[in-house]
Amino acid sequence: MVNTLKFKVVNESVKKTDKHDARMLAEFLEKDMLPESRLCSQTSEDLRRLLKTRSIVVKAMIGIKNQIHGLLLGYGIETKRVSASFAVSKTIGVLEVLPKRSSHYLIR
Image (cartoon, rainbow, N blue to C red):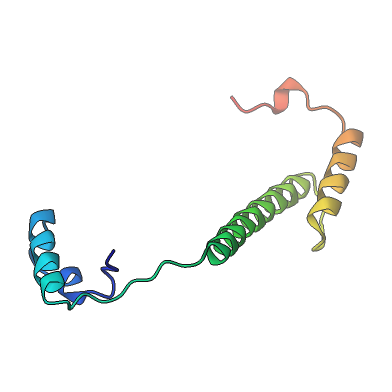
């Protein structure tokens, strides 16, 4: 396995074809000049996946908080920075007391 980002001969070559890249790799392998590439441990891979998942969840929470903030602003309710669970419960509480929108509010 070769990390092509560290193997500049393939990475910076002008002729970008699989056949050409394979020939270059074969030549450097024959001369034992390929850079080492290491696989990370299972623990490192698990940690990387966990952090990636956390990052996705945090971005989703921020998006939901922004949607809730926009919804409340649409009703003239200003909010402060609060936790996501508080914002959701406040929004649900506000929506329960608001009158139901009639059909003349619908955008057509």
